[in-house]
Image 1 (cartoon, rainbow, N blue to C red):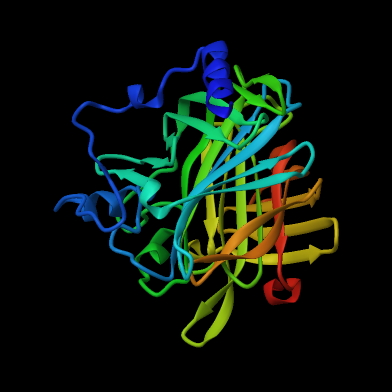
Image 2 (cartoon, rainbow, N blue to C red):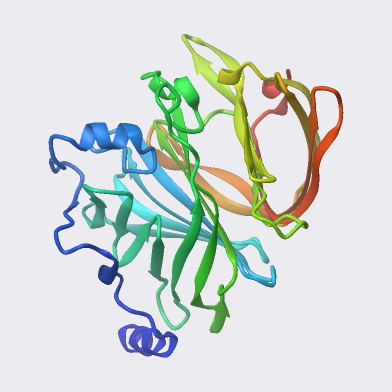
Length: 360
């Protein structure tokens, strides 16, 4: 019954099998395969590529695809990934920003494939890449099926000695967790069948980032939005975390504000500092001071959904995320002049662990 229903929905939505997005000579590899002699240098310069091609245990890797409809009434995050812990498997997590409901769909580790030429992965029948993704999830008569085409993607710049959002920290081999940004902002076209309803994301906006390593930090704050009230391509991301380091720990952070056609980068590696951090059950305020500018951030949580996070590669930790949070971001130059002041809805927001570990 499910296969018949799935076929009917795919035909109704006009979806095409996602392999049409793959070049004929493109090779997809499984864990343990040899992706080629040059793959190591490719993934170094492209954080969005699958990074764990040499890993066999105590490892995780996942990508975060956020989609918001043109009306703003629908917002979802799809999180494909792998877990190489005591229970190796691949997965796709889903969070509904309107209700806070989440789903965790398991697949065998043998059902995870990655491209040897670009960022593109399969998790069972689900396909994810930088220019499109397709999902076919759920059992019974209430599946999630859909496809989105990604266009006008704004990439985070990768340069020598600054390989992405982490800067030179990307070169530190014993970091517990690494972070990458695949798309600061992009346009969407596509339709999804969810909760027995056809939802259009034509004219909507999307965002993609990723994490990989051994474990997520013991405590962190993460926020992101690219649906600001100025109706531009403005995009903001900030992560503040407790970072283990040589038997001790420190508070590290990274992020960016893309506004007025410029990318304002800030992080521990740039010499910026967190000079204010206030956090309670629902609200958060952070001020970051860089050499040439100051960022003021205010956030209000929305509905919280339960997601699973890794500990030594095992997806065994429960965290909570909102993707209907409300945030405000203010950018000022070193003289205090306001360069940008915008608010956003449908923002992602995670407040995890003990906030005292993050105090400046």
